[in-house]
Image 1 (tube, rainbow, N blue to C red):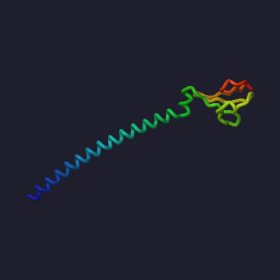
Image 2: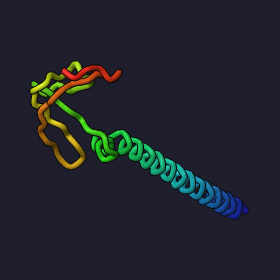
Image 3: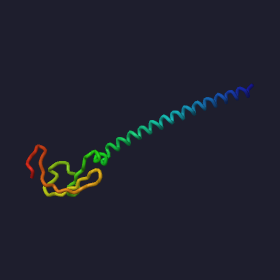
Image 4: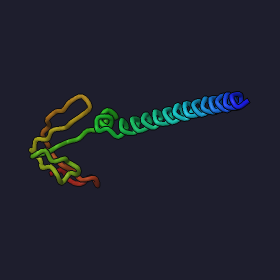
Length: 107
């Protein structure tokens, strides 16, 4: 009689253990899928913010003397050589003139 009770208890414990293992495997799979989705989302955000991706959308970065980034017309002078970076490389150019945003006179 006692042996039957023990066997029954062992069977019940094994069944419970199996159910817990199944739950754990399901939760682990779900967490893994969520983590993969999150990594993909972050990768897409990084690609979108990548300087090269910005250049591929048609933007460029122009640097003047000493490598400083040109952000406004006052940063360059006529005759200055600048280097412009685009998606597939860079090129040098010489500033012929400078005009302000309001359509001011060229220097």
